[in-house]
Image (tube, rainbow, N blue to C red; front, side, top):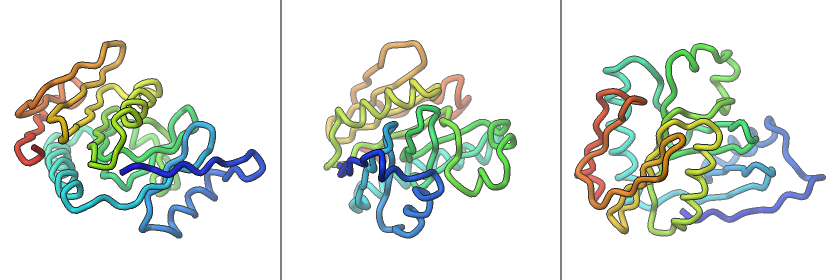
Length: 191
């Protein structure tokens, strides 16, 4: 989904609490903020993208429940990154020790950390360049493994710390490597 960027002058910048309340009051929209505080407003996805994303999340949650070493999140989960951006990846995961280190209040709002693992699923209206920039932002803020899944081109871009982006053409599955041991994402329902 292509986002509409609302440039926020310094006098109109929202506090973290104000941004959280704005999101709560407009649940039919998906908001993010970039590192300078500009609002990115995105509409809900279409049915095909929603189904694909649900299948990704289902597999991640099933693995996370079996593995029990961390917490998985769907696309409605917000993360306050170290660079001050507020982002909501399509799917995310953090280790249990990071979750347990959060206060109850932190757990109830946007999590003040960068996920160790994220998935972004390109919808038909998404700009590939915008998603690639977002993936780089995650990596610069601490994500250890990220997948940009591009059904239109039947490609997956794999992002890892301190390595070049790897592009796979029409893979059947993806491995969680050492970040999500024994997690295999079946891409059959995505293509």
